[in-house]
Amino acid sequence: MPASAWDSLIVKCGPCKAPGCQYRAVRGSEYCCRYCQHAACPDSADVARECCPRSPDGHEPECPRLKRCVLQRSWWELFQCDQSYDEEAACLVVPPDNFESLSAPSPVLLFLSGNGHVNDREDFLWGCVDTLLRNPEVQSKFFVVAPKPTTSCGLLRYTGDGWKKSWAEDAVWAFFTEVLRRLGPSQVDPARLYSTGLSLGAAGVWHLAVTFGHYMAAVAPISGGCGWPGNSWPEDAGPDPIVKARLEALPIRAYQIDVDTRAGNPERDMTWLCWDVEEERAELCLPGVDPGTTVEVKTRCWQRRAGAPWDLWMPVGPLQDHSFWSRWGGDSHCLWTRVYPFPEWGLAEFLLRHSTPKARQWRFDDPPLLVDTTELRRQQEAAWAEEAAAGPQARAREAVGADGAADEHDHAATGQPPRPVAASEAKKARVAQEAPEALGPEADAARAA
Ligand SMILES: [Zn+2]
Ligand SMILES: [Zn+2]
Image 1 (spheres, rainbow, N blue to C red):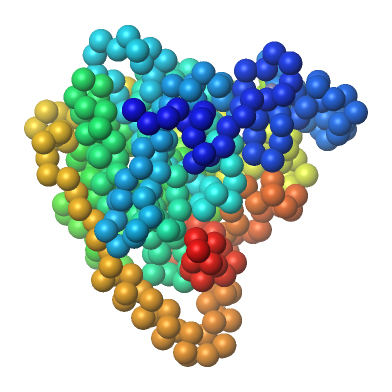
Image 2: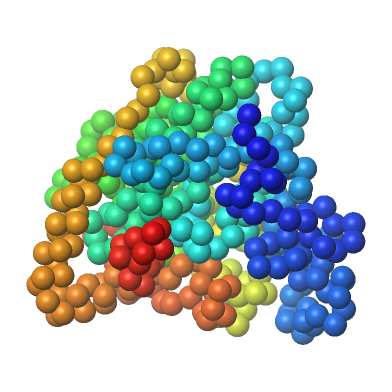
């Protein structure tokens, strides 16, 4: 077995320096959060002055709370997931609490991160899979598999729309199933393969559902919609009948703030695809980020007579439960900071309610999926070269068109509010998936070099 994730250099780990704290220090700090920093050196920034509420456990609400022992029993897997790239992709595997004494195969939850973690822009273990691992049901019951998104390994692809990126569903599936094979049938229950993701990762979950949904027991995208890759839903026609049937057989629970279009919004597509299905509506009051706060959630549930249930859980935004966002009028995007940590939001319970019938389960002896995007990349590079040759006017137009969305964590890095989302919405809410980087592929290539 590879070295533990705690000892690996893929994402460096060190202990929080506050006496008695068991958590990992976040990147660029010696502490897990500002309350530990404040406890260890009272002369540091005045936490109270920064309007940061303190959770009952003594930490900031968004402290990752990633225990050293969890990372010590976790590890990184490496795999060349696309023949077109030399670099191996990396993927964190976090086993369930009772890992050593497992007597039966476990469910596996594939997690896809947002754009803020692409190419290590932000600490992979802050505001990412750590948020999901705060959920006690997730940590006790699932293997969590979290690929690390880089543009130099094939796990991300360019959508063909400016510099916009998407998780590459074929490469993700090739890597995920390779991890399943390495874990083996004594640890993996192929009837209970699930996927969840946030923002760019939510779009990635939708794309996986479109392509490989027949192998999955249920999915839960948060704060992102489907870009309908390939010919899955052509502009001038209905959805591909095979894709439609695949999705109708897959239980889906989407979580989305109603006003959020930053990484797409699935409401219109789900409503369209459920036009003939009976719908039930309800309202829930669920825990918010700051201690003692709540969030009102409207739920829409479609229960097909023959087929899978779909849920859409939509709080009315912008959300006011997290004081960090108050100076920007509330949070319109980062819904996962409630859904993942708090079991009351029902994520694990929803997933575990569903399993894949034997006839369409993924099998350990299925031939591995081989991915090679060499020709596709050659075509894309030719198209970019053509655009560049078209002159500065075209580039300027493209820069305006590409500026549709800010990264979900830009606020943390820059102290600036997120940029507004482009007002115009594409037909059928086919909204841009995620924020482009400032310079596109050239910058990525330079970073990778
Ligand atoms: Zn600490
Ligand atoms: Zn902390």
